[in-house]
Figure 1: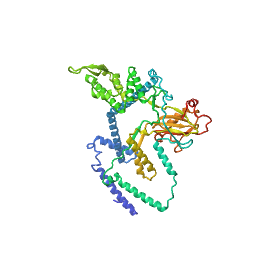
Figure 2: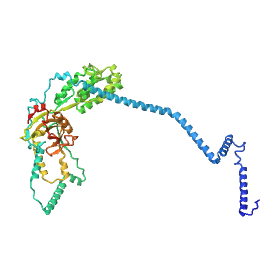
Figure 3: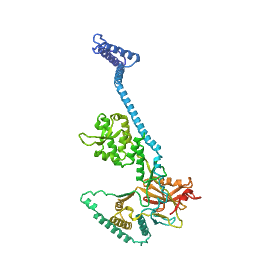
Figure 4: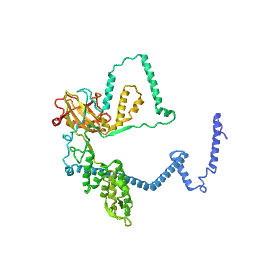
Length: 558
């Protein structure tokens, strides 16, 4: 029954309040609402949960739905934590074992690197220990390259330009080309009118088009065929006849004794053979394999020895793998042909024996390793690794230092390359002469980039070059270099001969009259092969002689 009020709004509000109270009572009396309150129909856990929710909601003045949500999230967090703990208990031993294996592998790699360094140190210590030996003293004092006997054959010379002028520095072909170019530049050409120039350009374009159409590559392209790649014609020479000979030295000989490469390797082999019976016998054999053979022979020998040793390591109890028949063709071609290969096999335990094959055949030579030696796996593995990581005896080019005195009143002379420089047959000489004539004609005509590129395909290569350095006071310092050495090597060669250590200088090319500033470039890249003369330009005035007194006393007139 609604309450009476003078305000109509209050009457309405009072009726709505009664409706809300009625709905609330029905809700409280419904089965779902009384589910948690009926002890007979509700689980104890749910009763406890309902009580806990009511307590938290009442104490913290929080809605029950938020309390339920918080309890749900807390339950999920606990479940995730328990799963994580169980997983860690299961997988932690596996992770620990994996980490341990990684640490062991890392330690093993470090040990292998240390062993490699130790092996390299063994090679270096061997070189240092055997640097000077009595064996080389028995070979004699050697022959100094500055003696008259070694320099009796003087290279022929060709005149260059006067003092301070241009100096021809390389092959006769270059000299002829430069002279032709100078003659062309000196010729006075008449001035052409615009009409004449246009006619000349049209004629040149038509000529180029005709040449292009006559080119076999162009015709092949029209037919849909791919032209064969251009082949570079390369001729390689050790050194030009301007060099009397290239000599070498190594740490065993000392810097003052020089030999030709063949003589050096012969003496080196003899010396290393005397060291095979010492405690460094394996290192001596490895030096022989790496130093005295070409790469293909060396690699074949190392691979074959590796197969022999690997078979022994895998089948150390089987006698057939510890026996090598010396008359076997593969052995003769792969091991016996390699200088030092047989010596290495003997140093690791093989012995030469005479054994009769099956039947009544004649005894033959075998290399046999005893069973006890084959059981020494560690030593065999180390020996094989040392062989695979070996190195050759470092040899150096002997500079063959010579000092010359130049007469200021005469023109400086440079080494001349004779006609038989390229060691050609008469037919090839005629062909070279024809090619040189064509080169001269090419310098007088306009040519496309493609035509010039084809000419570059003909190349001559050298391994060594003769460098002469002319000082301001008319001395010439001569030395032999590898073409791939840098210009800085020439500087290091010249500096010890100078009278002052503080003397600063630069090198200048007398042909181009340009300073050679890029001293990190190779002599080949700078065009200083197979022979060249460069000038020394001092930064300051020269107070006295540029060279030391002992070098001035040894100077010969050039």
